[in-house]
Structures are given as structure tokens and as C-alpha cells.
Length: 204
Image 1: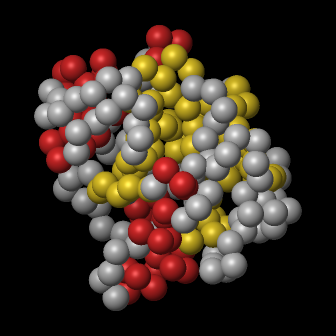
Image 2 (image 1 turned 90 degrees about the vertical axis):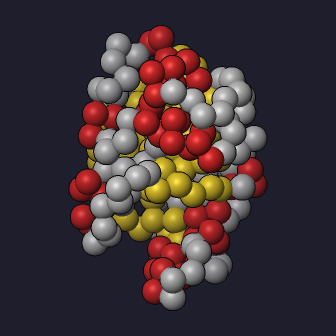
């Protein structure tokens, strides 16, 4: 399975990091080893001093597809969950300043915690109006809605599948809203999909 991620998909997040707004979706990947085992804490790595949380809606791909037409894209995922795209911001900034790839800043072991369960697409009244948020130690740090995305779910799937064949079981991290920030040892992170708590994680 593949973990495919969309960068710079919320305008306010682009602004807070002083990035340029891209004309097309920004795609990056995480290896399978980035997935955090269910129920395990996130252990702060020794190669970074600036790990940031980035909460995201995650699509679960339900069938194989290539060059998918946007009007059929909704048939290629069957469930939506939450994930955290942990980012070693110091490693990323160093790589970006040199014009180098930042795979290590995004793809290190344990950098992709997922909610234990995904909600079937049929349970959402409107895929363009899904609320989600992240709390750190009980305080809301990030709040987003799928309607705020620059590139819709369908646009993401259509674009990715022009270059990379989607396969059943692949995961698509659809971008993070504003409010990203550092985590520290001892923090408790809680993710909500609509008003349902679906992800809990401690930092050790």
C-alpha cells in the first residue's frame, strides 16, 4: 500500500508558512513504515527538535484506478478517517533552503498516526462539508472543513492517478488546515471527525 499526501491544500496554512500557492496539487509520499501501530504512543525522535502536528482527513482507496475522471473519482474511496502528518520542521526547512527533497522530514518512522476506524463515505451527508479538528492537551489547535480545500477529493484523486496508479488499500492524506505547531514530550493529542473522537495519541 501507498501513503499519498497533498501539500498546500488550505489557503490559511499556506499563508502561515509563507509558501506560494501552487497551480496544481503538491504531492508527496510517506513509506508504509511511517504508519504508527494502533494504540502506540509517538516517540519523539532524536534527530529533530521541532516536530509539528498536521491533522488531516484521510481517504481509503477502495479499488484500483489510473487516469480517473473527476466525475467518477468518488467511487474510488469508501471511507474517511483522520491522520496526523508529523513533520520535522527543522529538517524540512534545512532541505528547502538548499532546494533539496524533504522526504526525511515527512516520512520518518511513526510520522503517520491514523484513527483506528474509518467512517464509511455513506455516513457523510456532504463530502464538501466535513468538519474536523485537533486538540493538544484539551486545547483546540487546528480546525478544518473539507469545503476549505483548494483541491477537492475528486480533484486530488484525478490528479494523482494521472501519474501514479491507485490501488485498493492506499491512503490519501488530503492536506492540513492552519494552526500547525510543535509538539513536546508529554503532550496528549486528540482528533475529532465532526464531533466524534476518533484519534488519541500521546507523545513520549
